[in-house]
Structures are given as structure tokens and as C-alpha cells.
Image (cartoon, rainbow, N blue to C red; front, side):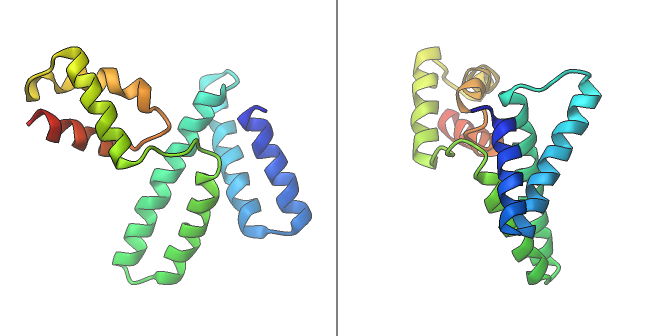
Length: 147
């Protein structure tokens, strides 16, 4: 089943269950997808939709951090609940160990030796981790492995 269909089904289920939090989160995702489709003037595929959801996940994580710094735990909790809902639409995220293993394999395949090869390694790792890992985490692992 396509991701967009899953989102529409989740919206219908949330409406039937009267789950307002899930309903608002799914509507927000569908709205973001619609806006991106209008901007690009074409229908998005599953990879594009995963990119949109990943962007929304990053925004939620940043909002949670800001709310906690601003001593607003009730808003941080609401954002956390939305984050959990959004993560349900992404593939299972790679663990830190899996990322390290993948990066080590790519480094050995490319015979990368130092920080100057970071661009080549990131270029090779990025498609393998797309939608499955945060780019910042991957970048940090590559930097540590090449140091």
C-alpha cells in the first residue's frame, strides 16, 4: 500500500475513533504533502512523502527541545505525542550500531583514509540511510570514523 493511501486511511480511522491528536497530526502531514506537490507541480512518490514526514519529525524534535528549554513541558508533551505518530509513518530507524557498521563498510569499500574523504563517504552512505537515519547522526559517525 502506498504511503499516501496509508495516511488517508489513518485519517479516516482517527476520525472514526475521534482521536483528535492523531487526526490533527495526519492532517498536518497531508497538508504539507499537498503544499509540496503544488510547489513542485507534480504528484509525490513514497520517497518524497517520506522526505516530508522526515522534515516534520525534525521540526517536532526541535520544538520539543525549545519547549523544554522554555520550561513549557505541556507543549513539549503534545509535540512528543505528535512525534510518535509521525514516526509510525517512517521506516524503522537504524540504530547507532547499524549506522556505524554501514559507515565502516562504505569506508573500507572506498578506501577512505581521512577527513578529506568525508564528502565521498557521505555521498555513498546517504542513499543507503535515506529515511532510515538522521543525516546529522550519520555525519557525526562518518567524522569520527575518518578522524
